[in-house]
Length: 213
Image (cartoon, rainbow, N blue to C red; front, side, top):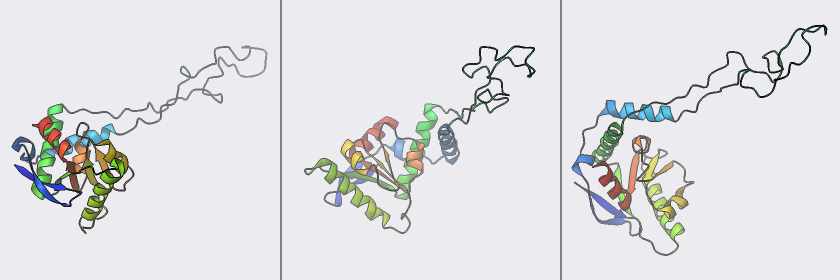
């Protein structure tokens, strides 16, 4: 399998990239993709509030006043729930939202989505040649290419994911609106499933091809 390679500086197709049939020719398994995506999004949730009980609040070791003779109600600790600054009775326990899927399932789901992007024509491969000021020239080329893609009425305003390991490109594009930056080592199901267009630079695409094969 081959994918056309676009040089962003020349703005033209300059060659092809060989793709693995096992990675980019897989059947789209919607149930598997949905399961892996749901687990990923669930794991992004932050644990809720978890107030301290009277046993966990610091202080309150000394009995605040004598048991008898003061005319006040008896008290054993100023960290009782009856006092300001005391513990909370029956507060929320701070649920941890964590779930798991095995590595084979994750890889299969990503292969499935990559194959669909290739079949739909929404997977692009690019190469950026360095011509001087790295951060400026490389980022400008990618930015111009992404904005050109967004000119399509079907893509306008939707998320685009750019996968690259080039630190200069990542530095220049980190604040671009509706652009998700990912690396070949850390690419996940959200990075490949959410965008309308998925763009790889040549080096990252080669690494992904080897990693998932």
